[in-house]
Every structure is written in C-alpha cells, then in structure tokens.
Length: 409
Image 1 (cartoon, rainbow, N blue to C red):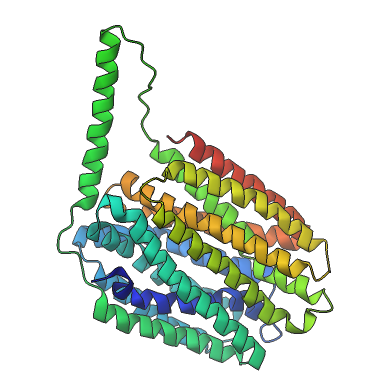
Image 2: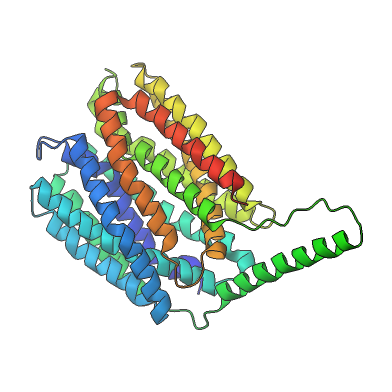
C-alpha cells in the first residue's frame, strides 16, 4: 500500500491542528476568555510536560507489544472526544487541564507511526519515506490554515472552530481504522543497528592493522554520542518553542499596528503561517529527493544556523509599521519552514539509527521536554521584556544546539 494512502488519516489530523495552531493563542486572549499570553504559555507548558513521560510510555509499550495500529486509533479517537469537551467550557484552568489530556494522547501516535514507516521501508528509503509522510501532513496543515483564513473572514463563532477540530480528528480515526496496519515483519531497525556496529568495528580493526604496519593513520575512531545528539535535539526544540509559541500574537499585534492591515489582522496571521507550512513541505520534499547524497549531520547543522540567523530578522518587523512587514513576514516564515523541513527529516532518520528498539518514544520525549520549557520561557520573555529580546535569546539557544550537533559525531 502506498504511504500516502496508508497515512491519509494523518492529513485530516494535521488539518485540525493547523486550524488550531493560530486559533488557540488568539482565542485565549480574546474578549471571550480574557486570558493573557502567560496563560497560553502555561497551557502549552502543562501540555508538553504532561506529554513527556507518556512519549516514553507509548513508545515503550508499542515496541513491547509490537502493536502499533491500536495506539494510533486510540490517539485520534480520544482527541476527538476531548476536543468536543474543550468546546463546552470557558474556564481557563479547565481548558488547561483538558489540553494537557489532549497532549498526552496526541503523542500516542508519534512513535508507532515512525516505527511503521521504519519497518516497512529499508534504511536507504527512510529519508524519502519520512519526507513523503511529512509533506502529506503539511498539506493537511496548510488546508487547516486556509480554513482559518476563511473562518476568520466570515466571523465564525469560537465554538465552531473547536467543534470542527474535533470532527477532523474523528475523520482521521475512521481513515486510520481503514488503512493503518501493523508491519508483518519487524527487524529493519535491528539490522541497521547491527550494520552500524560492524562498520564501526571494521573501521577500528583497519586503523589498528595500519598502525601495526607502521603506516600513517589519518582517521580517528570516534563513535557517535547519543547524549550530545539528544542535547542538540532538546536545545533545538527549546529554541523553536520559545520562538513559535507567542509568534501568532506577535504577528497579530504587528498587523494591527499597521493601519492598512489592521482590519484583516486575524486572517493575515493565518495567511502568513501558510507560507511557513509551505516552506516545511518544500524542505521535506527536497530532503527526501536528496536522501542518497545528503550528509544528514551536516544538513542538521546548516538548518539550525539558518533558523538562528533568520530569527533575528523578526526584529525588523517589530520595529516597523509599514506595509513592508507583510512580504518580510512571508519571506522569514518561508525560510524558517524550509530549514525546519531539512532538520526534521535528517534528525528523525538519525534518531532511528541511534535510539535502540524499545526507546522509540525518546525522540518525541526530548522534543516535548524542550517545547514544555520553551513555551513558558518564550511567553514570559515576550510579555516581560518584549519580542526583540525573545528573538535574540532564541537565536542564542539555536546556536547552542548547533554546537551540540557539531561535536556529537
């Protein structure tokens, strides 16, 4: 079965979260709830902290039972019900609690999905397969953002936004029920681990024999550090979450401060994020097409540097009220998305090599842990010191992530 058909349900799931991504911070600070940016930071922090242990748990459980489909179905089904519950209350503490539960079940499908892809394709096809999956889901995310533009333009009630998110996750459940199946054989990751071990041993013996023969040895026997890889991933997630969590509100304020754009600020926020998602999709496709010649560690490092430098350009938007901020916002989000696409495909493929079977949830646990700290730190810095300070701090953390990835292998 083609990958795009197998994971068709994920398109609708990401459509729901694309719609939710911009709506949620704007909803919390709207007149309906009278929340603050800090309330939103707390909500996302609680959700991510709650998800971290469950990323380990779901990843361990699916590998232990060798059942993957059931966790994907559980994730989509329970989220659909929880989002319906989310639409029934205006209490911020209760919304934070429900969103925390949503996050716990959201991560239930991540590790099983990765394993299904890894076990159904050879190592040579991992980058291309992950890229195809991510491009498919980004199409869903973009459709969700387009729906947001339309819904804001027609003045759709907040409750209907959330109900549509619930419905889309219900559709994802039904499609996963039809098309997702567990792998028949589960051994590809073990073969890759054995190949890496024998390659490392062969290199060691070759260096030793050349040394004994008196030959000059230029190579060094250096293994890959899982710890530094994890540190780099954690720091990247921290920087990304710091930057991304308050970013919809930043653009909303910037567009409202520009007289010619103030009347359509809500729709424009959705519109500019469409270009970011488009950049993601292009990055995934390019990474997949270059899989055979791409040096994954180098691609990871270059992607991080690009995101660090482009983040600083957001300061120009914060300092301007001219119409130029719109094309500049589009360009910045497009480049950030393109760099993220390369980073995600490369780091995800590397993680399937480095992280042993039974710990498939470690990748998303680290991403979630960085996001948990980042979303609260980012909103706190933005509210207390301003967005320009936030952009500078995010750039510094991106650079620290680059350093960790630079020396991990």
